[in-house]
Image (cartoon, rainbow, N blue to C red; front, side):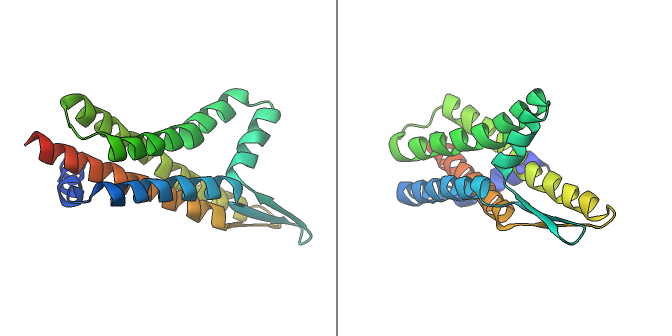
Length: 172
């Protein structure tokens, strides 16, 4: 089964969601994402007494201020702006759009692809923890922020699949 077929299967299953539930899913996705951005996502301990909690936004700021503005800007765009705009747009579509056309179906397809980037961010941070944890006298652990961020990405994906299923059902 291809990814497109899997997405289509999920979309048809989720197409039965009503507008209120879809709106709730996107509001929850936005809330979880915002909490995830501001809550410590990484706890680093060095030499047993130096500890640091790093938020996702704090890490992006450190990149920009540390001489990596292109990388920081790219991560800011893909990890913060895109997921929040996607969820907000999904919320508006779920609440106000009643006619599903090819343009809406195409937009939802793009959202489905973009949603995979947010989940990839979670895995990249987890790999960073593994690498940092292997450094001499350094212990790194995931914080609650990463779990909220992952929940936001997952809820946004579920909402997008629900809208996609509703659009497919409307198009016949």
